[in-house]
Image (tube, rainbow over all chains, first blue to last red; front, side, top):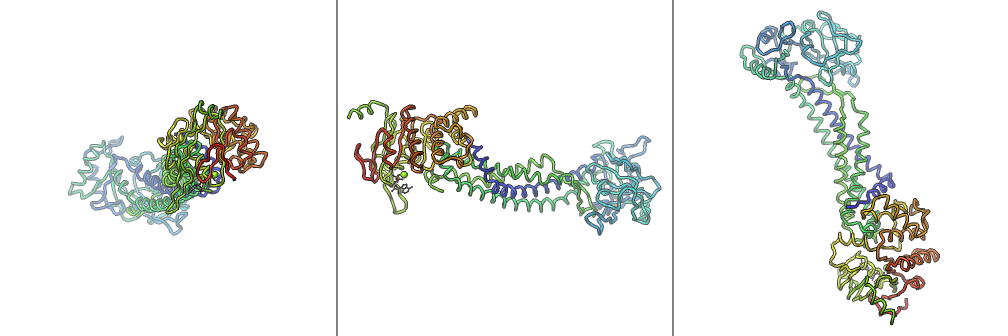
Length: 389
Length: 240
Ligand SMILES: Nc1ncnc2c1ncn2[C@@H]1O[C@H](COP(=O)(O)OP(=O)(O)O)[C@@H](O)[C@H]1O
Ligand SMILES: [Mg+2]
């Protein structure tokens, strides 16, 4: 079917102001939607990339988070004796006893302080976390020294936690000797220190928080989880590290909900704005519609033509929306976690796929807003259309 | 009556039988056209005259299938217009009919060339061919140097000549014009009438033109008069 698309495009260009105003409404809607999607995407990937499927987190029975968990050194020794645990080069079982607590740290956008996870651990704990790197200029903390390494997002967002600075927590001063990169993982929002010193500072030398265990393979991992859970003597809970962080991503739900809600309201609004613009266009161009019909364009050509005009208008808005949020890409922000009571930093991630979704959403708005005006244009009687001014 | 004999021997382009058009709105109804019988042959230039409201435009609209009759028969170029679907009519009009309006009705956002190209978008012609045809049509109406001009940059006479180019670009057999000189000064009106006459004589197009201007009617080969919706017998004129 022949559609005079250049005619529609030309009209959009000629009516610059109306086009831009309507497109802006759609752009803002798309921008809100994309920000929410980017936020959720960033948060999801922060949580999803934390955790190795072979790593098992061991907590006190009944604990849902490391902060409320206690695992004793005695229990740690018992865990080490379980079968199915991977071993390091020297033949030692890969089990990391860890101490987790929170401290208040003043951040750029919260001078009063935000909860940040402190994790005391040994070299084994560092080895169990793949892809951890120290940024140049720094190094790992040394055993027996009051030194810490901070996650990359911590270093970026908390002025007090810069490389070379000293943090005060527990009963000591801790020198920041390194900044660690953990990709998108939640480790970026943690501070690492020596297990013995950190747990001693909180009087929990013999009763730290959790153990991280590496299974030899997927089958052993499942068996290990089961073995630990059912061992009455151990009295511990086990969960795969991946599952643990997945469970915590429920805290993204309120953002999803609120963002989605706002986006839907805006979508309804901007779709009506598009409809209004298109109705005005149809009525203003009534005589042109009649003329096109006399030239031989069919009703369906006219319908499609105005429909396409509306979708193009909305796509333009969607494009502006994408451009509006692009500078936000990679912007680091934090979210309080209701399970761990601490903050997880993550980067807003506007992926090409998300932008495509935004563009598609905009076009959907244009389609919804354009349908009735287009139908109105197509159902006009030629003579009636020609007579209108 | 040798002229009638000649007409009868040539091909009939338009034939109506008791063609009637009633407009009914609430209790108010108008008979715009009543039992009109007319035959127009290939190569004729017919002027439809009559006072305002006599049904001239209504008849032209029915010939162009822009509206449906409420009674009688109408056959144009061998097609019974009452039997065609909306889509078929659209296609038929694109191929066979060029329409010229009193108000020119050019698309304001398109250039002269683009306006003339528009009906060709419904054909299988490629872009380059469409532009070539449109350029040729504009040259024919003497506007070869105004291709890129927008309607607002043209005079009324030039606009109407662009409209004529648009009407002939698909090479239709039938050209219909509703008061094509109604909005023009005397000189431009003569240009437009000369052009229609040339299309009729040199390109053997059948032209039906509505006018109430006796001077314009002089360009036609035959004049028919309408009064109160009725077609007066051949040769009978109204006072208007
Ligand atoms: N859509 C319409 N509704 C009602 N009456 C109409 C309509 N169109 C035309 N008429 C009436 O039909 C008659 C003929 O109109 P028209 O053909 O436009 O006259 P002309 O072109 O000769 O001036 C007039 O009385 C006019 O008022
Ligand atoms: Mg009229």
